[in-house]
Image (cartoon, rainbow, N blue to C red; front, top):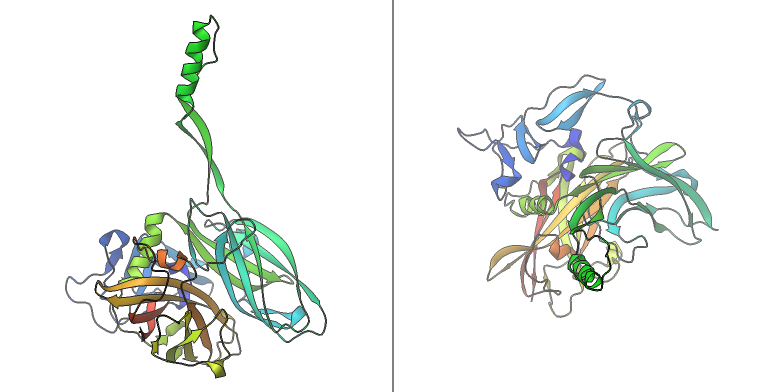
Length: 418
């Protein structure tokens, strides 16, 4: 689940003391999320089916904060070789030395064995997902000739056990300065269940015809067995390894339908002001701006930032988040959740929910991150939990864009379509 990302760094302090009787826990069954009243020295942490206020325990050098059904607790660190759990005790390098590449992000999407579309997300339906794919986004100097490299992808079940591993061979072509590569797996379990046999009445009728002619028909059963292939529910971890070292890591979750939409609903209902900061990066939001875009983003120097666009001519509208922060000294995955809402006669309602799995390289400071908004299909509209047909296009009105990191609203911007 997304709440398990960057656990040790998710210091979501609320600058107000809790009032008597104030809400200290939230469960998905409670309805729309309206925030918690935590003390200044408390953090909002995930619990089973929700979140709560917790004073973080002080862990020993050989311990780390780990999630549990009642919040975070200190647990002794074990090596991957001994426990089979993700990680080898080192931070991801964020690099592929053979091609001098930096890893800009590790993203996930679901699809058929040979994917034709890529809807990037971090939550999928456990009983409908087919293959899940990871995608590496690379930034590198242009090679003079075709340059091969290999990575190993290691998949972990929610239990922490290794589910699958494979070696993938790729090549970067001459002249390329950015590239992306993907691999996938289908980690379903099989359950056999009995259902009503749709051919049962036909079998009975055949038995009667045979009996009337003096014969004996085959026995009929009112049920038949079918195999159901589902992903085990929970959070999966994928590691990308290069030369035996972890180069990148990411997570995605398999949940039931109501849990998927509850996650979206809780974020969409957040009306708190943006913090303009990301605690885990020690980052300050310098700006969140929007600009018109085509199939690919224009160069930064050619972006026409605006707050008004023409509804009839706009294709995609992209956002750019500009951050000021010190170099983190290690590769840091940065997952950004974008919620786009429209203000119209019905009030304010979410029209798109998108996930950007980006990263901050170890020696980079003052980074900027860019995501897209558009109507290429209904996927990102449906991900809001909408029950009405997608508009399929930009409608006139005022739009609010909220960005979340570690479930904290870190930036806000508004723009208008005319």
